[in-house]
Length: 300
Image (cartoon, rainbow, N blue to C red; front, top):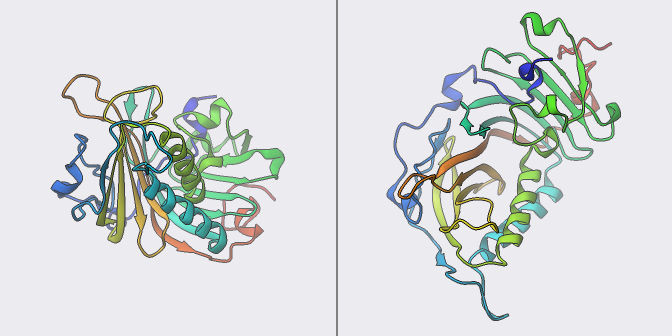
């Protein structure tokens, strides 16, 4: 079976105005402390004010009283995770992703998503590119033998009908850096906490906070973390997290690898944006049932 058949992420947004690409370059403030070119994702205006916090760890903390520059960011992430788990039962959104797979940076891809936290449930409708437009994917933790259900949107592929795949199987992972079980703002926040707790064991860490950044027109605070020197300890050269000031959830994450040559630009590895987030819609099991008459899984 072809590798493209069941990609669970990937699409081009049908309404261009919803995800208009910011034409301007990033403000000079965001360029400080990092050589990475600003992300130019749909709906993204990474401009922000001067950093509220600018810390350089230099070397690892040597006393119990020393505060690692990651501590403020870690505190925000932990409080954010607690808030998500306490206050958000479900949400709908438009997910925008871009990933580097096997050394090649793909195009921006888009999907409409319904996500419920308990039990963890995902419904995806692909909006493009044309190769996957109309494709649907369902996953509910503990159901369908732990599998995701997927069908192609049109063409010869659609004749195959609905298939059941393990989320981490080769076919399900084709063209994706992470399985569907890792999708969503709660999972993103959990990973941010894990990485920050790991990285605060070490020095060589620059952390800056940029207020008044914008993602899809919404005011955010951008937290930028940079590890200037490549080390096995670190997963990235530069990472940025955009926290929606009103919703207090991460609505964008981007990570860069170190330049391939001295003086070069960091390489974008992955970026994910959650746009048009609407929380607590009251989703029920019907929203994650392949028999839902508004879906096209062909299951009765």
